[in-house]
Image 1 (cartoon, one colour):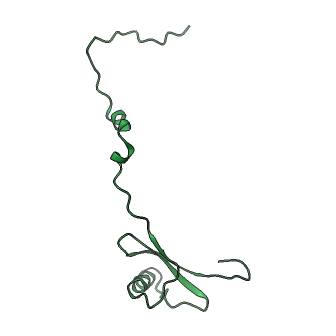
Image 2 (image 1 turned 90 degrees about the vertical axis):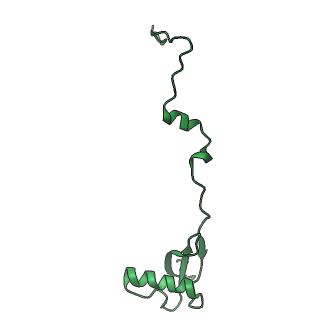
Image 3 (image 1 turned 45 degrees about the vertical axis):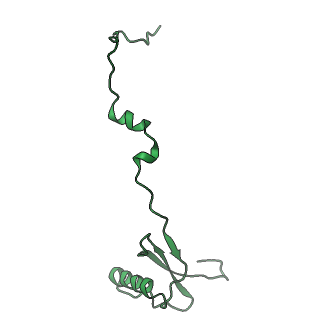
Length: 103
């Protein structure tokens, strides 16, 4: 048979401090995490009249692709994701094609 008990006796009153990783696991999860930022905001269709957002989309597309994403083709739209500070984080240009049920 297997003996699963410790062979060494612990002295009375001697307390071994927990490993830092173990003590952290007992803390509440929210105490370990910074507060979550608010979720991003999505703009389904950015238009030129949305001055600040349109300008940011234009600047990102010119820098990344050397083309103006705000100059859309017929049926094309531009969507944008805004961070909690209102700045454009990402954009996508898309066209909905109902006849072929595609995006």
